[in-house]
Image 1 (cartoon, helix red, strand yellow):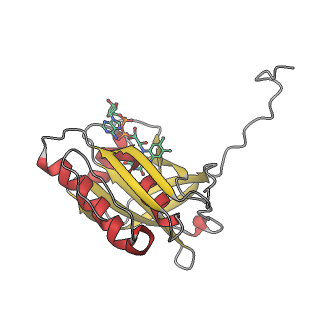
Image 2 (cartoon, helix red, strand yellow):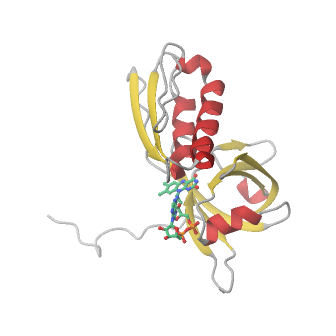
Length: 198
Ligand SMILES: Cc1cc2nc3c(=O)[nH]c(=O)nc-3n(C[C@H](O)[C@H](O)[C@H](O)COP(=O)(O)OP(=O)(O)OC[C@H]3O[C@@H](n4cnc5c(N)ncnc54)[C@H](O)[C@@H]3O)c2cc1C
């Protein structure tokens, strides 16, 4: 029997969690790490890599917030602090918000969600992503068993743009350093000019 939309149970909306920006740092020219904190993050857990949250951000000239999808990179239960990383791609409420975000800014987060199940038996991974998936790739690399190896391909918006290329390389090398143990024996490939670790 084919299930119709009317047969499906209504999707339960995840509650909105009001949070406040506690710090902002540039990981690369076009990648901003934003730490948000709030008691409403009580019970938040990142159970699997490549999850997502909805962020509700004030948008210029709009009554309603802009709702966008971002990757929860790290969550510290003790301080109820969540890290999100925003790629600055230019126009767009979320990118523009991140570009000027500062401590005290308020937003809401809903989630996390995601159904990714890590296959712990996979010995080698081949990952391809665009810039906006760099945070998701980082969460996946971090979760890999220490014996797994990975090839990571990051597509940058303009391979001739040094700043852009550097952004991808800088972040991915940071990930590689952080994951040196996990990646031992493996190698990473980045963008057009390829940076190797192996
Ligand atoms: C599961 C999931 C997880 C994600 N995690 C992250 C994350 O952790 N960090 C992150 O930065 N992004 C992430 N994204 C992508 C992010 O949701 C989009 O880039 C989002 O559209 C940005 O919103 P905006 O308001 O800045 O731009 P929008 O208002 O959505 O778009 C404005 C214009 O910018 C263009 N645009 C939107 N995004 C990009 C982009 N990345 N590069 C180039 N042009 C773009 C659009 O095509 C449009 O022309 C994720 C997406 C998904 C589905």
